[in-house]
Image (cartoon, rainbow, N blue to C red; front, side):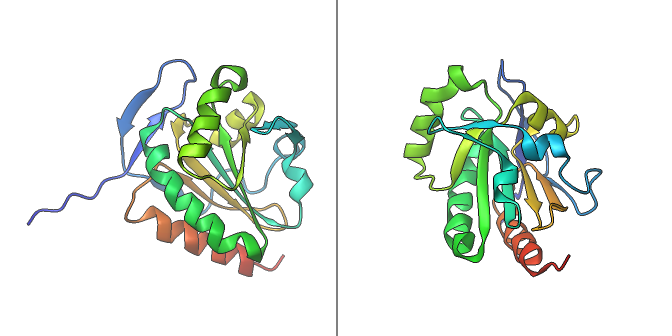
Amino acid sequence: MLVAVFGSSCNSNDVTPTSTSSAPKTAAGPVLNSLPPNVLTSEMRAASGSPFKLSDYSGKVIFVNLWATWCGPCRLETPELVKLHKEFQDRGVEMFGLSTEEPDASAEAVRQFVSAFNVDYHIGWATPEVKFTLMEGRGAIPQSFIITREGRLMRKFIGFNPTTTPPQLRQALEDALAAKG
């Protein structure tokens, strides 16, 4: 029996969704070592309509996922993120799903996505500045970021592989919770 294991990602260009296939990449030592002030203090819009900033959650482990409603790998990843949120929310992890789409144009699609996938973590839109800073020129989504309580970027994931990504995300969250200064 031949079994194919693959990972995939989409190109995020906010105009025309284009799928690409590639193995998900992780970076244990990313170029960004901590969240820049512009990412922490940028006011973003939640799906509920209220504004928020990542700095509102300082002192907690933060999980940020950049995604889009039209992205197939993002749709595959979301049920796993819902499971992770249920597992880690009581341990001080704040999870954010930030759409890379234009907020006004995608508001209804995002609401439908949240409902269809029973998403119970923070959902909103990344500002262009936040998106471009975090993605560091890599337009592929999904991208996930694990940030320690001190604001250090512990791990970055690009793409999604249903076999390997969930346990890697879980371990990165455990490592971030265990991190000391």
